[in-house]
Amino acid sequence: MTILLDHPDFEMISQNAPFGCRAGYTDALYHLGNTCAYGVGVPQDDKKAISCCQRAAGNGDDLAKLFLQALKGDAKSQYKLSQRYTHDGGFMQDNKKAMLWLEKAVAQGYPEAKATLEKMGRASAC
Image (tube, one colour):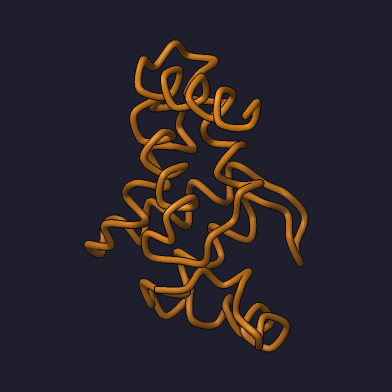
C-alpha cells in the first residue's frame, strides 16, 4: 500500500477523501488520518488523524492500527513505523519520516530505537 502523500494523484484523492471517509472506506480513512497527522494538503490535526485512524483500525486495517498506536505515543509502534519508512515496508521510503518516528521512540527510551540511532551515527561517521 502506498500512502496518500506519495501518490501521484494526491490533490484529486485528497479532495475526494472526505467522501470516502463518510462512506466508511478503510483506505480513505487511513489516508486522511495520515494527511492530518503530517499536515500535508490539510491543516495538521492530531485529533482528526487519531479519529480517522481509529475508524480505519476498527475496520481491520493493520497499518492504521500501527499508525494509530504511534500517534498515541506507543514507543514500540513508533519504532516499527520508522522501520517501515526506512525499509519501504508498505509505502515509499522516506528517511525524514523514518527519523521523525525513530527520534520519538528514542525520546521515550525504547532500547531498539536507541541502538538503531547509535548504529546510524556510526555508519554516518565512516
